[in-house]
Length: 192
Image 1: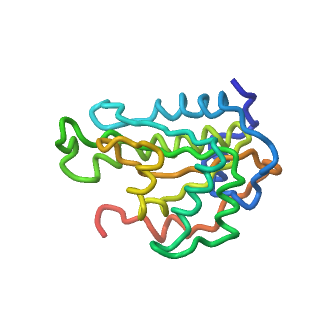
Image 2: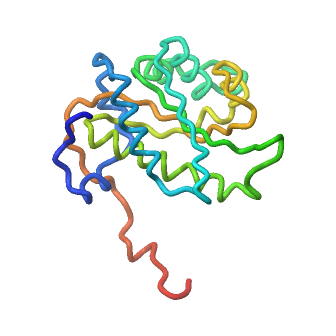
Image 3: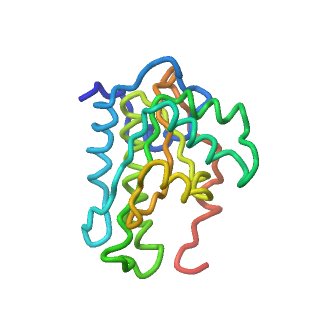
């Protein structure tokens, strides 16, 4: 288990965000550290305690580059070179998935319980990574070409990918909370 950063829960929650501009592309990320984060992630709440989550860990450079092409290129168009290079240089990509079919039939009656059963685990993964000095970037752009990604990565047809998380150590660990609207502008007490 990696040494944890000295962060309060509030600091951890308010400073975990997309930090790709501070990724250290030259520092390898041990696979064991990713497994530690996934162990924490699988403690997240999930519908009916199905635990249908899966985490596809990509370290192969060619597959990381492919994910960049699929994420950033327009369908049928060329990828954005700078961003594609960022994807290729990020040492680890984690694709969070959930089993969505059983015997060819949908497990969930609508998308809300399905996503509600995996997204808490994705956020927990990002928090666990931050606590260990890793940065993450949560993206879903590859989903518009998920068929190509599923074919290239052998993702089974009964599994739905929901997020791609590039992961790297960061240059420094001092992150500030992001700009957000005040709570009194988004809270509706007792009625809208």
